[in-house]
Image 1: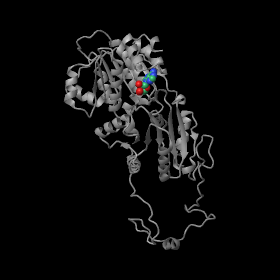
Image 2: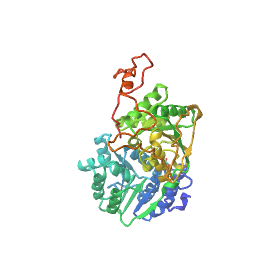
Image 3: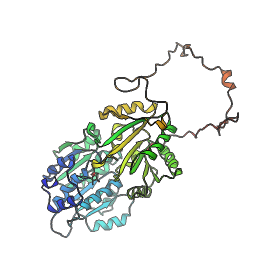
Image 4: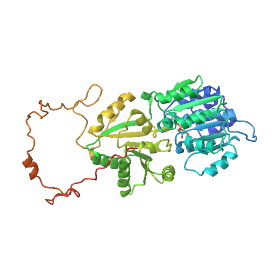
Amino acid sequence: MFSDFALHERLLKAVAELKFVEPTPVQAAAIPLALEGRDLRVTAQTGSGKTAAFVLPILNRLIGPAKIRVSIKALILLPTRELAQQTLKEVERFAQFTFIKSGLITGGEDFKVQAAMLRKVPDILIGTPGRMLEQLNAGNLQLNDVEVLVLDEADRMLDMGFAEDVQRLVDECPNRQQTMLFSATTGGSGLRDMIGKVLNNPEHLQLNQVSQLNATTRQQVITADHNQHKEQIVNWLLANETYQKAIVFTNTRAMADRIYGRLVAQEYKAFVLHGEKDQKDRKLAIDRLKQGGVKILVATDVAARGLDVEGLDLVINFDMPRSGDEYVHRIGRTGRAGNDGLAISLICHGDWNLMSSIERYLKQSFERRTIKEVKGTYSGPKKVKASGKAVGVKKKKTDAKGDKKKTGAKAPTKRKIANRPKTDALSLVSKDGMAPLKRRKPEAPAAE
Ligand code: AMP
């Protein structure tokens, strides 16, 4: 129960108003320590309720009678604009029965309007490091009196190249009494370095044992023959699954655009988000998705970071994410705060080993699913090793000259190749008048 925490009654009233009944595990572990003023290093998954875990103790520290504001008392840094906006909303919801004011500083918004907001001096400032630093350099920001500093999704901030900016901002808060660092993953040496520099004798709370992840999200895999077959499966799933809102993940912008085009052609209300889209598009996509005007989002990993959309209950991995952590981030979009979710990964021959290493990383075995209406021929490798990976096909032996040794099947002779029907290299329509051969221009994968 939230009333077990030593929180001010006005905060408990807000918690009740929001219909939060039970604290989530990260809240149960972090709130008492944060209330004591301890530095915290928390590893917790996206959607675990970690925002309230640091916001409530900050508000509890700052709560009091209305007073003339003189300085910023708490600074919350996050990697993306959307995450910053969501955090501001969360702060405002919890602070609704207090006089505490908060402000937002992110890129993509009017610089002067932000400067005017800063002149009014919010108690809590939330934002992304890049723009925050610009406001600081312009002389609009004074962080000397910051008492509490939060670095949320610190691993993401490092991934996105914010290490130096974050360190600069941390140095601007020399009088802070408490620092809390949150990350979804345990991170690498960059994160360890940051932890060593910014935290003072922290308590480490490790909430996301990967094997416990997403207990409320069913995780399935469906095998596919090739990308076109994957597209058929996506169509079937979007037409037949029960969901409020869905997100389809791809590894490249080109594939995201392609799937989006197909969905729109079928009159689905969809939106696409990837690194080439500007801030306006991102905002529009997220607003429409939240309001329900759009039900399906096609996105790459970078674009989807920090999304918290209620009712997002179906995640389709068109491409398998490239790492276990990325997988955790993707499926963290669904099954948030106890709601049920479904995550489906589409697996071609080339995705199998990646899938099995992610299963091993998560210590989970994904449910195998087949859909008879769109069943293909590939159903996994013929043989798998103990690790779950495919047993490789033995390479043919070569002789000393590097030529293949004769096997049963003969290689086609030059003459036979020459006799094949010729194709027009550009249109790839076969000259013998048969059906056009499908081919798109080869394109370099526009990875995010
Ligand atoms: P977060 O991980 O902080 O982004 O939280 C994910 C979602 O869970 C947000 O929409 C929160 O409002 C919601 N939430 C957080 N804590 C609780 C709770 N104790 N009970 C119900 N919902 C919660």
